[in-house]
Amino acid sequence: MPRLAVLGYPVSHSRSPAMQNAALEALGLDHEWSYGAIEVPPEGFEEQVRKLAAGDYAGVNVTVPHKAAALALADVKVEVAHWVGAANTLVFEGGEITAHNTDVQGFFHSLPAHLTDLDALEGRRALVLGAGGAARAVVWKLDGAGAEVDVWNRTASRAEAMCKDIESDASPVVAPVQGEYDLIVNTTAVGLRGENPFEHLPLDRERFDPRQVIVDMAYSDVPSALLTAAEDAGAITVDAIEILVQQGALSLEIWTGRQPDLDVMREAARRR
Image (cartoon, rainbow, N blue to C red):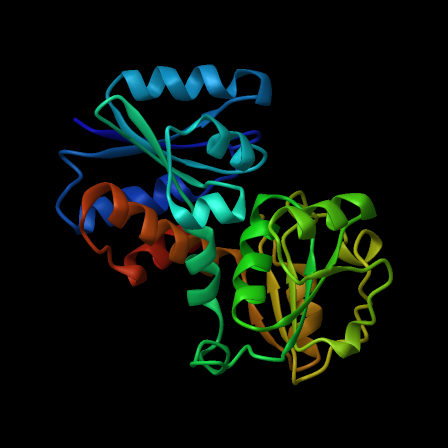
């Protein structure tokens, strides 16, 4: 019986098990496949992955803070994961570990239709908050689509290093002007534990406007204060659950070869 899991630290908050198991059941695969959650600290990550790969696991999802480490230990790196420099999906087969990155397309598929049409992102201004594995995926996709991307991180040198590392035209920024951007994406963990985003991010709750799209990739059991403020201003918002569903569906298709029902996954992810 092939097993799947999400690896993270922490991971108890993850909605992936409920979402993926619902998708497996809808596909009629729940008697053959299962999906769980494994909390593993950074110092034990590689050992844990190799143990799972040598056992009865078909693969795993990888979340904070392991995405760069997941890529580093892989025997085979799919092109997107290689260029992004991070992996969120590992496949175990024939003694090899293959690294994929479904964060890129998962993020893109979650955007509103007016930003996913051909060349729709060309020339648009985007602000990405954070410099971790999710930020790398977002910046790589937006830069490749022709957007003008600024990157802010609490540690400015990390934003600069990331932009150079993925060989993008994105620019690190220390004091972004909120109203100048068409798209703002929070890839940081701010909000994961209910923190006030306006105390930690370079944003003002009063300075969103209706032409903007605001994406928050941090999810918790309470509504996103960032998205609530954006919605109050009339902005279009995309929450972390939609991105989780989109990237999770792509991962499940890689493992099983079957396309899951997105609505089933959405319902399960939001029900928790």
